Image (cartoon, rainbow, N blue to C red; front, side, top):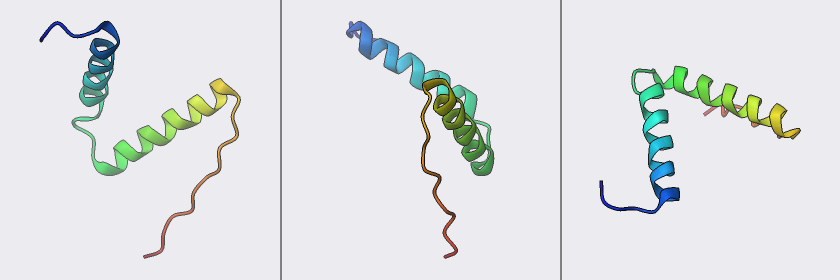
Length: 57
C-alpha cells in the first residue's frame, strides 16, 4: 500500500475486517448482523432510534 495517512489506513483496516466478517453471509444473515450491530450501538450510546417498517411491495 502507498504511504497513506494513518486515519485512512485505519479506515481501510476497518473496511477489510467488515468484509471478512460478512463475505460468506447470505443477504438475510448480513442484514441481521447489521441490525444487531445497530442495536448494540444504540444501547452503548444511549440512543433511541426509530425503527423502519418493512415494505409490502
